[in-house]
Length: 278
Image (cartoon, rainbow, N blue to C red):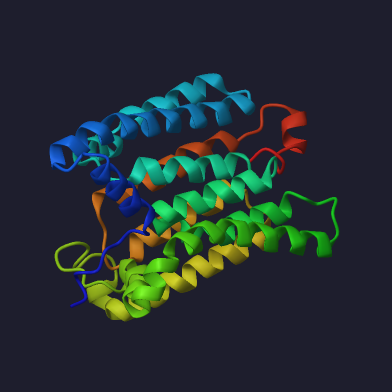
């Protein structure tokens, strides 16, 4: 029973249903429309990545990062199987880029990403902590309001599009949301890491939750750049989640490449602005 639930939030299903109603009723018709859209998302990921490097005055490194992201094996795999990863990752990268520039736009983009694929939910605390540390001139009350507002805006889009499913079958919808961490792993991730050796499946999930929570705390206490902290959250998820698919690695690659843009500020001015451009 725990291997049959869908793994996406409803936006992708609305999209497929809309195309079906517009006449794309065969799978090949759907793919002929989806492939150029997916390519557009892929290329835009490269544009966002390069723009972040360019903002850090590292254009050569930006070209290298874009080449890895656009031409590497994990992107090639997504192109081959035509999964939704590019569509989900692009808005969350924009959300990160605009986090302390345009928080409302950032929150909307984060919510859009969640509405396509909710892998990014583990990154929401990283973004909220990054939002807080990026506004050092404001008092605690203003910071709390910013964090609350960001959370509401980021979650409102997934909530609104999910209302029909929640009303129709609430238990099934909640099991769908939890499916990524509760599903039977079968051949995907079986006997890897500490799972079968030390802690068992439930114990390894507990380790994952504890480590991700510690990473959030480290980001807040040690003032770690949120791109780095988000990368670590994804790495922990990939290392300890019961199920691992090849398409998950493009999430890690995208965040890792962008986090490298903040390794060494090239000017004193950039050092002073590191919390406002991340």
